[in-house]
Length: 448
Picture 1 (tube, rainbow, N blue to C red):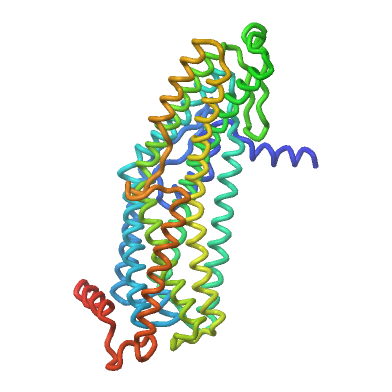
Picture 2: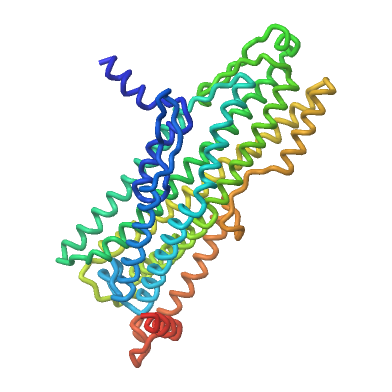
């Protein structure tokens, strides 16, 4: 039994950056989100390799998404349409199809055109091992490996339960979705979720390395507090870090050299984060946009039904109707929270470094060390980890407030459309669309 447990435990232990990302890149390679897969050399070292099949697979997904989305748009058929159909739901449904088409195009195009950015990010992270070894740090990637497994299992489990629930509801009323509708529904949710997993794991990699730097500096501060700085330099004493950081340090250099190496590591982490932001920036913009749109319309459908203002004609009971749209809304709320929290944790770890550096600056008596700390402080002012959505807004917790305000505004507007309609959401007295709905339908009809 103990032997079996050791084998299982060994599977969840990784000592290389690429090996820790193997499950993630296997899934992204399968979905056509990256043209890379992890390959192991004869010497046991792993690396990322781009294959012709990976590029071909991406083009297959682009063609499949384009065909399915355009067919669904021309036929006016969708999963939401099976539940009910009103003027506002038709507009929301077509906007969702348009957004899904754009999101798929952006995500898959980025996988091809910006593949060098992703590869450059991982190359920098891999090269950081040498810099960490210079200050006596050996990074273990087991936590990153387990985190990637946990994120993937969590996302796939939620998607699996959601897909099974939706299709069981449709089967219960003898509705069989077409192939294009099934593919648009499946690809939109799954591709977005896997892309979010990739971003979260990369952001977590930055967070872990920043945690190591912060812990090394804290240990240096602890040594100064205990007034054993000279003993550290002369007797090469060990600095033991917390196990939660999956690392240990054996400092054999003087504090000035440790701070200099820490500066170089911090610079490389910021450079890797900036490169990763260039790769993910348009993907995050499209994902957050489509998530916001879906949340707005789903919240409107649920509120309209619960407030009793809807005179929808649907084969589903109210509980089933509300459950479907609530689950879809929660699914995309989780997507936004995952992106924001993944980015925010890395940013907060980076901000903590400044406080530790200034604490060291106040404690040191050595002019050389003080000069290095001043240089580090200047570097922290000019190099910061920051994730943006195409430069339009920062991806941090302030985004919650922005989305909440915009969501409230649009919900009020949509509910006013229902309140001002004589037939409560079924058009005006003459059976015509609202002006905005009529304009949108005219546009889409011309495109068809």
